[in-house]
Every structure is written in structure tokens, then in C-alpha cells.
Image 1 (tube, rainbow, N blue to C red):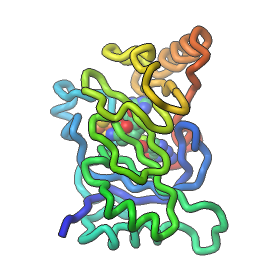
Image 2 (image 1 turned 30 degrees about the horizontal axis):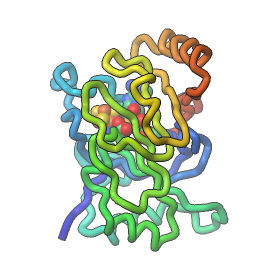
Image 3 (image 1 turned 30 degrees about the vertical axis):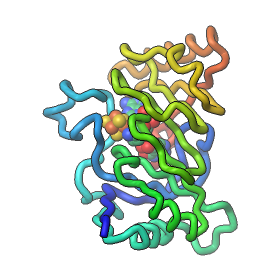
Image 4 (image 1 turned 180 degrees about the horizontal axis):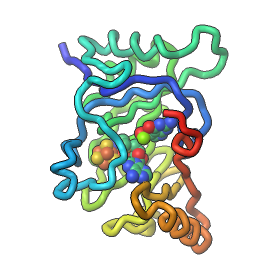
Length: 212
Ligand SMILES: C[S@@+](CC[C@H](N)C(=O)[O-])C[C@H]1O[C@@H](n2cnc3c(N)ncnc32)[C@H](O)[C@@H]1O
Ligand SMILES: Nc1nc2[nH]cc(C(=O)O)c2c(=O)[nH]1
Ligand code: SF4
Ligand SMILES: [Mg+2]
């Protein structure tokens, strides 16, 4: 039977994009196809600005799950029993579409979850995802050109926002790149949106508030 590996699973607020502020269980799948996750490989990786540790299964709530049912059960354990709101799980990583499949989608739906996914767009998404966020990276080939939100980290040398205007998304976000030039990147993002108002600003609000 297929196993699933998560670096960490935790309950927080979605920090980014159109669902920012919503309570959600985050499942951070291990591994990515655009970077090994090791600092020694960063400079030669396709995606070089990643802000996340997705290596291994040793984070809080992380582990190797023996089945889709077992992973869905673990995720469900983080949703408060008393809650009346819609259950939301955000599948991220690493690259979640290396692992998330029809079986796990069905198991999460059976538990009553709305399923959101954060993906780099290089792998075609399976059916049944309720909220798909695609975030293109460097020179990778984007095969997932439709979804709910496109969230481009800005600026990126290899990608300009204009490259994505004929993609089929309901929302178009620019998210300032968090690196040593963050203050400059925030201002550049605001300036760009002033000139191209079809784009909206996505701030990483979990970093501002200091939550996970
Ligand atoms: C860590 S990625 C994991 C999901 C998937 N691999 C992807 O890249 O979309 C989650 C989100 O964080 C964004 N992100 C990663 N590093 C960032 C950084 N340094 N500054 C701003 N956003 C970043 C990604 O673009 C993506 O939207
Ligand atoms: N709170 C919170 N919101 C997030 N939205 C996307 C995230 C990610 O790393 O995929 C993220 C994250 O790591 N934390
Ligand atoms: S594609 Fe996503 S998880 Fe992979 S290295 Fe880039 S930002 Fe990180
Ligand atoms: Mg993050």
C-alpha cells in the first residue's frame, strides 16, 4: 500500500492569498521536485528562494503514514471538536502533488474537509481539489494553468506577471519575495500593482503575526 510522508502537520490560520485569515490544518508533505531542500544544493536548484524546511518527517506532527485513511485521521485530529466552521486542510510542502492522490482526497472529503493545495504548477492536479493555488517558479514548465488563485512570488528574474495573464484563475496575487531584500521587494510589488491593478497583494500574514 502507498505511504504518505509529512514533514509536519499543524493547526494555524492560512496566512496567504484569498483565504488568508481562515483557520486551517496544514499538512506539509516531505520533498520537492524543484529543490532537494539541502542548503548545499540551493544555488543549483530550479527554485532558489524557498523559505521552508520540507526535508524528512521529523517536524511537529510529522511522520510516515501507512495509508490515506491513516493520514486523513491524523489531519482530522487537529481540527477542534467544538468547531462549527467549515473544516479546511491546506496541503503544502515541499510539493504536495508528488503525493496527494485521489484516494487521500476522498478520505479527507469523507472527514468533511475542504481541500486547499499550494503547488508549484509543474504537476497536473488530480480531480477533487476544492481550492488550488499555483505559484510558478523560475524556469520550470507550468502544466497546471488553471485553478482558483495564481500566486506569483515577486520579483523573479525568469518570470514576469504578464507571462500568466491568459492562465485561467479567479484571483491573481503577487507575494513579495521574503529574502534579504524584503523591504525593497514589498515596495516593488506595490509599485507593480499600482501600474497593473488586475493583480492583488498577498502578504505572508503568519510571519507578521508570528504564528506558524
Ligand atoms: C513553500 S511553498 C510549498 C508549495 C509549493 N511547492 C509551491 O512552491 O507553491 C508554499 C508557498 O510559499 C511561497 N514561498 C516560498 N518561498 C517564499 C519566499 N521566500 N517568499 C515568499 N513566498 C515564498 C511559494 O511560492 C508558495 O506559494
Ligand atoms: N500560516 C501559514 N500560512 C501559509 N500559507 C502557505 C504556507 C506554506 O508554507 O505553504 C503557509 C505557512 O507555512 N503558514
Ligand atoms: S517549489 Fe515550493 S517547496 Fe519547492 S523549493 Fe520552491 S517554494 Fe520550496
Ligand atoms: Mg510557508
